[in-house]
Image (cartoon, rainbow, N blue to C red):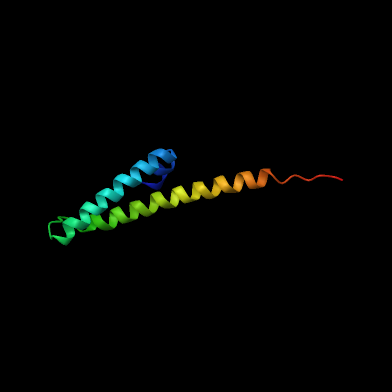
Length: 78
């Protein structure tokens, strides 16, 4: 998937996709260790997909932290 497709997903959907991708990556690693993996490039693709999802989740987390902090600061004239 492309990053734009991931950004269109909700956080819950991203978490589920991340969980599925990590599980798939684990199975591919087991297959790789037993020399039964047909396409080794799939390991790299899965790792990059995990990184993309984690990056988008982290960006959203930082944005959520930034917004409330900026709203709380108001000028008061005493």
